[in-house]
Image (cartoon, rainbow, N blue to C red; front, side, top):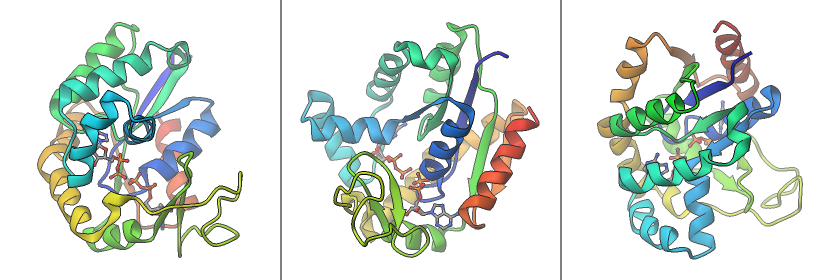
Length: 217
Ligand code: ADP
Ligand code: ADP
């Protein structure tokens, strides 16, 4: 079987990260989240992290050249040769074209693009209740609570709320999605790769719908 490259598409808070982790585990693929990569750089105070921080805190996108360079570097690691679940990338038409070119160098291409659809009112509630573990696991105070409040189930570390999950920034991120990322819906639809998923269902039902779309490929 040729490697699968699955692109998770959807607005902030739709459940891309939650589903990408489950998919990667189920299919034995790596999970590549550009948001996680930027946050790692922020934590380690790298030059890239310092550059990205101002954009992330404002809810804006990090410039394409910087983002694409970071993804290329990630793809240079051999674990990506077997395929990947891409979460939060591409987010602009220029990034989508860069991804197509990058996969071409692997003699490969995007396999399927699940679009997780969730109305804006629900997104705000999901993001304001999102609790993250330092290693990137995602919880929700109401919809996916940890066993012990504010404590990661797996390694016991303390959970935190993202700076950019505050209501003002959330609204800007949703606008940025509509302006800059939503054009990718047509881009992938025209290629016959889009699979529309109702993201308002419980996590397990969304997962089943995504798995069905992957198995149809
Ligand atoms: P994204 O990566 O698209 O921003 P996340 O996977 O981080 O989204 O999910 C956003 C928040 O919503 C998290 O707190 C997560 O636990 C919660 N969540 C994810 N999927 C669902 C769902 N189907 N129903 C209810 N809450 C969900
Ligand atoms: P979300 O939960 O909203 O999907 P992410 O964790 O994917 O958020 O991204 C957080 C922030 O990191 C974004 O608001 C943006 O500033 C930056 N970022 C992540 N991925 C990209 C990308 N592909 N292009 C530009 N900026 C990105």
